[in-house]
Image (cartoon, rainbow, N blue to C red; front, side):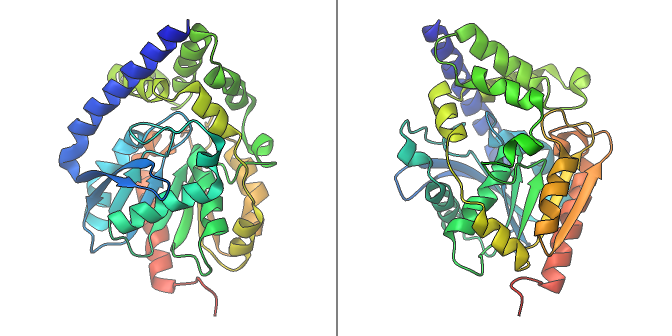
Amino acid sequence: MLSFLLFVQLLGSTLLSLAGDEHSSLGITTDVVSSDGTKIHAQAVGNPANPHIIFAHGLACTMTAFDPLFEDPVLLKTLYMVRYDIRGHGLSGKPLTPDFYTSDRYADDLNAIIEGFTLKTPFFAGWSMGGAIGADIAANFPHPLPFAGLIWLAGIPYMGDILPKVATPVALSFLPGLQDTTNATLGLQTRIDFVETVSAKTNVVPYNTKLAWIGSAGSFPPPVATLVLGRNQDAAPLLNEGSLGWPLLILAGTADRLINGSATIANMAPKFKNVETHLIPGAGHAVFYDDVPTVSNQLLSFITRIKVTQPYPLH
């Protein structure tokens, strides 16, 4: 059973390597090295003279999930976008001990990306569990934070007491199967079932897209899932920066089966002094896949407003 699951992970890694080659022509694709020696796979597209933004994907996914945004002509023309495989995922390193999954390591990965792509005051956009990296930013970078603003795309605010408040029972039901190291059938079926919940339009998602998503999930080792899900975060610095005016944009879909966007807004919006929220009708968990034009417009509107008004830090 276990050997079969390892085969699935190797197959997923192979598919990801092919996907990386396919998309390399879009921009600069490279590996940067974090402070602990972990390789972080990343890609940049667009014009460096435009506002900079970093995208982080969700659990058991990879940076290729952002293809709809990274192929959007409007965003390519107006932004400089960087996406990366979070440590433990995709083509990035997958260390197998807890000390590689502490909050400061996630912040150091961003430091390596900022230096590697010469980014200046980027926005940070986290999808799903990638949203929790905003808490790592707040806890490990000096104030004022060197990030122009925070964006949650159906994002989890942080790892901790907020999770059962915003994650649906469906989302929580996948966690045991993602971590199981003894039952390959359960592990594979969990990843397939998870992919079916990513889009609200799953019945019309192309077969090759679903295969790519399953490949991403298949390359996510169960022991790493346990380490990622078990990491601790201090939410206090995030809430403090929010009270000081660090801008936050919350985008969520009304048909999301994994994260309750209304609950995220209700629990987190009051804690941020400069917050903007939008529930996108009919969009699922991959809100940027289900409604590219709306997400693109909301991203540009928020980024433009922050760049013009410069509300953070408060004076």
